Structures are given as structure tokens and as C-alpha cells.
Length: 223
Image (cartoon, rainbow, N blue to C red; front, side, top):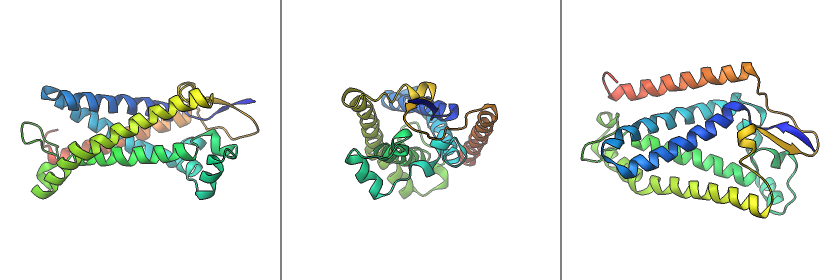
């Protein structure tokens, strides 16, 4: 067994920051009132992180790249039969990959609809004035009635999977997402995780934050 750097620091920070922001969204959305200002801010942060993850899915460390966990039907069958190849267990396994892509899509839909939602009381998304009333109505319905439940369901599923792997398979998923390394058999490539890659990730994050700032500013003069 050898120690292999699987998750680079930018990916690990993305994971924990996203978890914190989603928790913040759920709490502030349910509390309401003046906390909705923070709900909006958490939404902008999630959108920034999602944009970053898309870019990092092509430019990040080896195991953070989408190409390493885009699996075909045969990989899913091998995994379900307990015959997964070493590289199919090192990073995101086939089922974990589905969870990752599902969460990214659901969160993107949630923050996207949030930008054009209106609670008809005191708070509304920054881009409400740029779309039709019908779009606002549909987006608000999805955001409050559908997307919120999907996000909660995926979070519960994610936590359940962590507990399942720990209790029934003896596999720790949290540790590697903290320190980045896994002890694996055989020779597998490591994710690049040096100063240069980390600085590149910071630049990408700042550019993504600038893009979100620009998007929000389209409907919010003086934002």
C-alpha cells in the first residue's frame, strides 16, 4: 500500500466551502427575514464555487478532472459486482461520480432560479427585472418547492453514503478530503498539488467571482 495524493488542496477547499455555503443557504432560507440578505450572499458564493469547479474539472489535479470519473455502463456493472478496477476506486467511484454530477446540476439549477425568484414579500433575485413575469413565477416555484427538496435529498444521500462506506466497507471518505491522500495498492498517478497549481486555482476562483459579480450587477445597479 502506498500513499497517493488524490485530492489537491483547491478541490478539498472547494468541497468544504461548498458544504458550508449550502448549509448557510438552507439555514438562512428557512429562517427568512433579514437573514435573506445572507441567503443571497451564500447563493452568489455557491455560484462562484460551481463555476470554479467546472473550470477545475478540466484544469485541476488528475483525480479532480471530469475525465477521470466519466464512467460507462461497464464500469458501473464492475463496481456493483465488486470488481471495480483500481483507478475506478481511487477518486470518485462510479456511484460517487453520479452523486457529484447530480449535486452540481441541482445546485446550478437552484442558484440559477434564485437569481430570478421573487417571494412577493420583501426579497427578490437580482435578475428579476430582466425576465418575464411567467419566468419569475416558474423559477420561484421551482426554487421553493422543488429545488430546495432536491438539494436536501442529495445532501442526505451524500451523508448516508459516507456513513455506509465507513460502517459496512471500512472505507474512510472524509479523511482523504481533509489531508488529500489515500493508501492504495498498485501504481496510480498522483494529483498535482504544488504551489503553482494552487496559485492557478486562486486566479481561477477570482475570475469566477468577477464573473458572478458581473452577472449580479446586470440587474442590480450599484451592486
